[in-house]
Image (tube, rainbow, N blue to C red; front, side):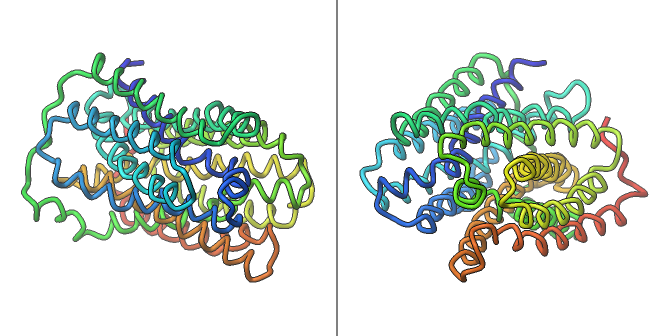
Length: 385
């Protein structure tokens, strides 16, 4: 495996800690800043909003050599998370979370292009290596950050993210070769790919497919502790189990997408999410089934998103960087909406486990969009090799 791909994976590891550790420390942050659980959930939405705002900025940087661009984005990871770690109150933390999210989508969008240039075997698998950093973050980084939050302070969570952002910067600087900028198609040319329906179907699959799981995952901590009655300390290993699901889902989906059409792989996974979300709701008070179902749910979460990050590059000719960043916009706007929808269901009195129910119609819509994509592309879109 190329050291440059590992450096990118370290960057997504930092992003994974910054994004997903928030779920495991939600109660700690709420208690320390004097806000409710639902208000603390807005910190998830603030990060996602930063992603949505920052990703389109790649258009302005399209002429920059790719290595220099990845170095710049790595430094933004460091700066944003340092600001979050040092925030004195809720509102400054809210702003810092927004700033920390700014480089997220751009890093994945530009990184997907870098992976396809560096790939020596399947391009989907190369992208999976980069995304694998985020999944490993959920096996190691997020549980450790949760444990540190319980033992010391939730602020160190963001310090950990900043540290690995710095490691990514050093790895990219040392190991990544010079990569020329993409051919400049002009400002209008960056958007020309959006005239086709395929990118919109991919974005719909990402948005609704991710939301189907994220409605529940945003509130996994209160569901585990107040419905299933796990002790707070158990969240460390529970988040580790969920992270293992992400690793397995990402690897399997990458390999399957190198052998079968990515649209079909992700469509089937979105369809499976319908049953999994229903099962989570009805088994929310049963400890063992809930943990097992959480593993499956997070496997589907990354199984849907990973291959589509590769697939958009194929359907965004002339605007590959914007197309790749658009995946992260769809992903994180989806996360923000999912967190808000889950919180709304709780506020309406449907119960702490009710966010899983909200995910069911999202899964149906996402699956439908991806099956339509498959039907449109199956005759001329061979699997990646």
